Image 1 (tube, rainbow, N blue to C red):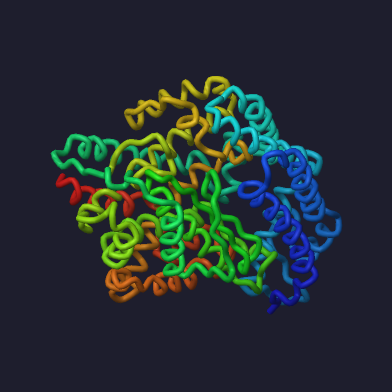
Image 2: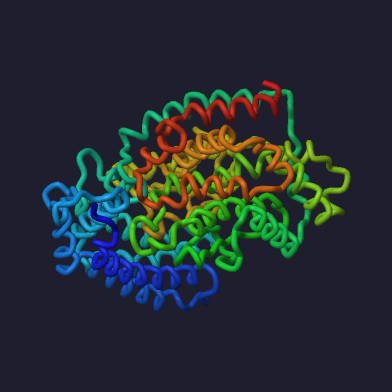
Length: 510
């Protein structure tokens, strides 16, 4: 049987490419955290050069020659080497390398460099435009990025919609046709549920979350929770950024960021837990396979499932706060004096249509994703023009959530994604929500007394389960195959819908 040892010439080449990509990621991380504002233009050129170099190496004739030894270029299937069959890791590695190579081969290297440069520049302009509440500042960059992403979709090819080509980059195999029924099912049950909640006699007071909370103890509490989750600070960092994110250069060097608002306690708290979930996935990847698809996360939907599982299924659970609330109460004695755990639990789970996606409750969050999903499709397909976005955004916010942004900073400019060309990214957030509940329910079935463990602050038992079931496999299995291996079924909206209907039915006495 052929094993990964046979593929050593290929994996050596892949490792070289990964190290270039990791260097580009370091520059991107710095751009979002510590780089001076004036460095944007030079940084864009630096990142573009590295990403262009990595692309050239991936699509080189040397790589093609290596792959042709083990893969049938007509079908992409692994062929026997020296008359011996491949083991599963090797077959999976070849399948995924061929996928990456085939997609990259369709993109000219000069196009990759141009796109990278324009995205880096656009991120700087977006941040400035958001701070000044000036959509017009960002509009020229957005037009450029959209045109390039439409061009990318043409290079990649698609059967029905150019949006499918972009979506597939983030969630392999996903299409509009496959996602639409999931979104329609969610919408059909979430919208009536939200209406019942808004009409409920139960009115939850979440004003305690908006008292004055100093930055330093907020960050210290975030670090404490991250440590309890198993986030390894000898292999990771926690920093501040305008938009919380996680990036990884290697399983031994993972960076998470958060943001702190004096009058929004939940902002730092839940972004730490959320990004910590991403960080645990990256730290849990098998270091032996670094540089290959087996050392990479399988999809953004699965990645998001890890952050949403920790943020919502754990971080917004009653069990979690039985252990952590006394610590938080001790940290902020003045603000939380006389506030019991039931009041706090209700406050952090208050359902209230809000303007900002990353601070939305777990029920309305998917409505934020749906409107972005619809807007992105229309933009990429040319049905909507960028200059019309503020009005369209505000109308959809009113249609879905019953509220209208008072500024573009809280509306169409709130997300960083379009500035770095991540069209097709947003739907993976909803997929992550669905996967998260499926995974957590399976963990509850397999781990004896998991709720009691969480209530005692012993979170490592869950972290180990996730590492064994999901993290360590990298891209060995496709997302649907991985979900089926772990839970017995592919992604479904039912577990999530049952979960929110039960939880919020109890909270709001529906």
